[in-house]
Structure formats: C-alpha cells, structure tokens
Length: 128
Image (cartoon, rainbow, N blue to C red; front, side, top):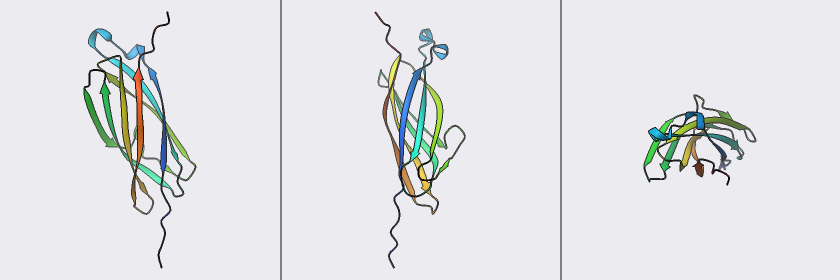
C-alpha cells in the first residue's frame, strides 16, 4: 500500500514600519519593525521550529541571524490557521532589505521550509 503524504505549506506576508524613536542617525542606527503573518495554506498541521534571516543594509553589509522559533514561540498551525508577530532590527543605513526562511516540521516529523520573500526596510521620504 502506497501512502500519499499531504503537502505541508506555509505562506508569509510582511509589513514594515520605520521606528524614529529607536533611531539615532548620528550613531548610524536606523530601526525598523516588521510584522509577519504566517499562514498554513497546506492540508496538514505544521510547526514553525526555527528561522534564518539575511539582513542587508544599503552599503551592502549583510548579517545572518539564525535561531529557534520566533519571539519566543514555536507555533503549531492547523490548516487555515495563522500566527502573527512583530519584531525589529537595526541597520547602519536609512534603508535596506531582509529575506529569510522558516524551518518547519509536520506532526509526523517531515521537515519543510517556508520562504519569506525579500522585503524593503526604508525610512519614509519627506513630503515636499
């Protein structure tokens, strides 16, 4: 008997916000918040286990961040469920970009990845 595995799938959407109160241009520190919504678009439950971020500022400096969970959580999502969280980062320039991957696992220990597409981190332009 051949057992066909249901496909696990998470999708991610991102919104960003410049944080002027956490920014110090004199010190070369520009702070940005990002809110991620992770949706289980697959047909089986899955758990977010870890993350890998690649953060690049406008000068081309790249930092990689790896770790377990997100903001202290490793959410288990049933099909159709979502998990939302907000975190933040600092750059040495007033704009940059991030991209990443969430490492996930199904209930029966099959691993899969959920890519986070590139998103921009930018200080809002002054209106003229």
